[in-house]
Length: 127
Image 1: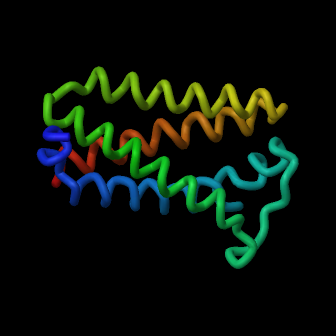
Image 2: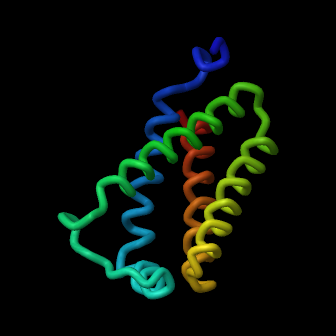
Image 3: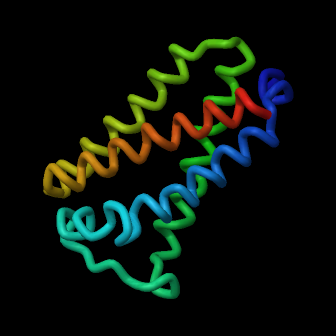
């Protein structure tokens, strides 16, 4: 638990929040949302139709990944941070493949995690 006291929590929370809002743009119809929704066989709804559990899980997952990135920042271990990001992205793709999402949807999800990780690393480096 001692290592958690050294985490830059401001950078961790900001990285997670920015990644969350980047996801809102990423999955919007202006970017990849329409093709992603088709590949997942779901309908894009309005903001008031968002699935609460999915959104809450996303926030928790982003905070956890941002915390891992924050911990790796303490030891200046970008390799471990990169492997953690790739592990999460690969697990997301694996789960999506089991759900029979198409290749486009899997790529959208994979690269969203990569972009989120880059945002989190940047937050740790800048703040």
